[in-house]
Image (cartoon, rainbow, N blue to C red):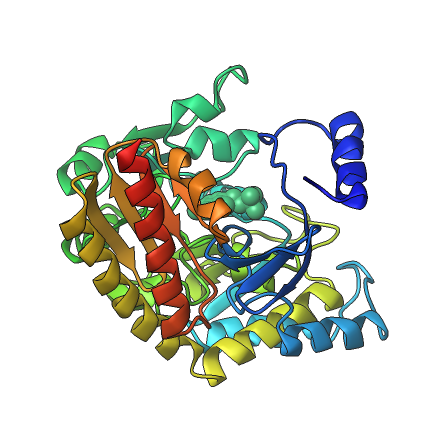
Length: 400
Ligand SMILES: *Cc1c(COP(=O)(O)O)cnc(C)c1O
């Protein structure tokens, strides 16, 4: 039973909010660290983190303080003028990664649109190249160009005709990528660890091979780090875990810990591709958004958070592998850092409801993968609680 206030919100949703998401029937009113509370006062352990967004946990004090202070100082002026926070954020992203330049925008799809435009603009000056090779089972966003880049046709259904200039090859298959390259190819686009497609990490040999291939052919290598970036896999950028640099990458989800901000980061050699007037975003890089992201990067890089991500990730992986031993329906456990997937032999969505009843929030990915993307500040005890919830849910499911 819901309280009257929760029921009122549900009724308003039903009547006034467009139904692009499946009905949720759960409403949260408060969050702190790795925990959320619903409108009826129930507590949940949150291993969904707003879809890999709240990587420092809910309402992290350093981020909340930065937002509050900046909101009382200066919120928005547009990119017709400078503000203090935007170059500060750009410098932090560059100092902790590779030398280059940043463009700020508001969502993962928008950052990927920027990557695609960067590749096409670069390609137009390099022999009229425009085609982008993307991966099967990839996910790059819901705008028309990023949908065309996305490697699962179900998202495109009903929105045809597809934007031209994209083709898909199997992930982790270097020969397929090599065979797909033509004189029109401008770039290869991939997620170093595929998220929505089912938590599939690139192999070390593959990523090194793709880098070499792009250099050989004189084309760009683009990484979509919207989900796997910002510390999620145990290094600030996912490419750092492989030691393989892209020519440009996109960031979004965890960059503002919930405050919307996204970025496109390009190597120095590409700094003059998108020239004045060729690309823009009204809300991109506001002082408010950049203040939030600056606090996120400082906390991620100075507070032992990345180390905790690696440590708890290894521990959680080990505990999840125990479940693989125990249940035949658990086929595999895979991932990197705290981006982990439990591969099941049934639709993962069927487990989510059972987990929620036990006060545990997780996600699905692909069709049969239970996706765990908790805040990077989780403790060993949180991992143990998560595993016992999953254990109990699997026991219940297999008995049915
Ligand atoms: C979530 C996601 C996107 C899309 O981000 P939005 O902010 O929803 O537009 C793009 N790429 C990857 C890898 C993602 O996980």
